[in-house]
Length: 178
Image 1 (cartoon, rainbow, N blue to C red):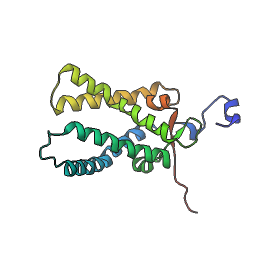
Image 2: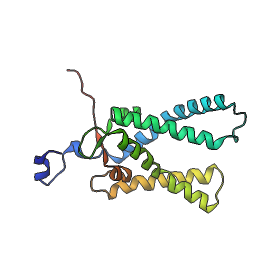
Image 3: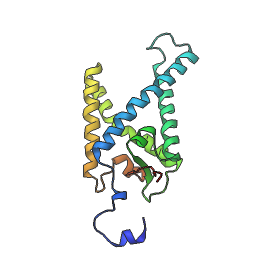
Image 4: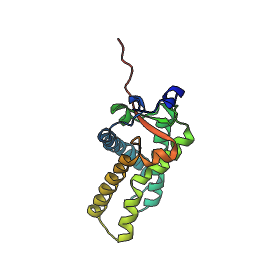
């Protein structure tokens, strides 16, 4: 941030504010739709290479492969252009606190901590002994909305994992030709 911005407290410049929460949640949902294809492709490759014949055989290996594939996807996108395809669509960019591009290490840290969206709900379902897609979906939806709601508590509207990693989401629009 430039010294002139730091010297004058007051309204935050528009470029430094987080995009509206509803836009970030729409991006989150669209990201899930796009990642469905990535997960299906990774599952197909894993099933083919391991000659998996039953869905319940090798689930831990498949989960590990999908975790790594998603990690590569996000780290590559965030440390390169600062955007995934969904973020480009919703005009959101990931930058460091200082506005600089994100390093691979910081992007990897953000990927790991972004699982905070899901882990509390999954742990809660497991500890409660709940089974089936209904309770799991309900817990996950409630957990995601509660986690997103935490952004209202942050002075700049950022998510917890962004605060912990030293990153932030900013509005971004592509340059248009005259």
